[in-house]
Length: 466
Image (cartoon, rainbow, N blue to C red; front, side, top):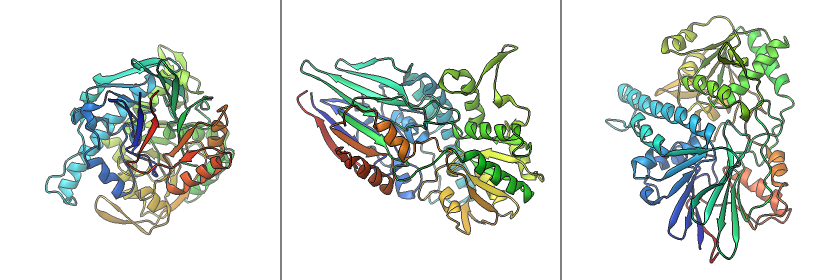
């Protein structure tokens, strides 16, 4: 048995996760994500995949963020008919995430056509809601820690990675008459002291390891989050402005609700209305109550309903376009949390189009902004930013709170890696921009680990003759 690994994404970048394993003539794809951020990366989404989707046997998913699942509708559209395996919560999240992504793609194509700012005479979405429907029957979900056979000689097991609801570390085991080999994919690792999620599970053995390095070059302490948030919110209230927070609908939004709720209960910030303006975030929040085993938030059954902090009276879910548009008329201080987290699309664009030019308002970044993304340009202090084909002046207060990321920082990555009883024979540093990947690689080389930072489309022979 020969095993090769080809990097179709997340190689020296933090998006587009796709790892292709070729086991003799069988192909397994670990993650199937969209590229986001810089235009040169986004254009890869439109290129033909370097492998025929019809020849892929199985897709295994670490978790439901779009940079890990967003290419699935295209893969199926182009001929994939195999099985998609993930955890139960990932399956539930994926339905919401992909439908939302398709809707956004269709809306943006329509908007570009109406405004005439596309280079194409008839802009088309990368995939449609109809394409998403074709994906769902192929999904087979399993619980954490259950071994699932995918080939006669290969099985998969999911361990909780703590990153978001359902997120997993993937362990692939290959057995032959001669020997056993394990390949471990860290997926995106969560924090050890996260307010909501449990810490990532320890894995003690791997022959080959792929580890993410999003924050491989920096520390992101969680102990200052509440102090920083209360200071920033109180400053924004003093300006008599509205606070707009671009946030991922999965994980970040729920974490922000938790922190704001706690600060209000402790009277460290005024009791402000919190508007959740993301259809996806609203649906996802319900899943947190359904999958209560996967996080620390207390969920109770009252009057035949699941109840938690998400049902507090000062939290308002904007379920219609009218309620979303009405937020433009807010005059008193309030908090608006809206997706997408990197300001690449979604309702947040309408809020920023309206609020960026208002010097009383505050835009609060609570998560990683990829190089080249609109969010990074605002965060870096650019005076104008393009939204809906129009240059919008940035006159509002722009603030960043660190520590809220759902990604392990450098110390936590090393803490997780220290669980291995002996270093893997080969460790690939993935899912990080060049500086992050290089720094983590150097830290591991100092411990005599054999590390490689793969390039996009690079192929490696992992095992031969097993």
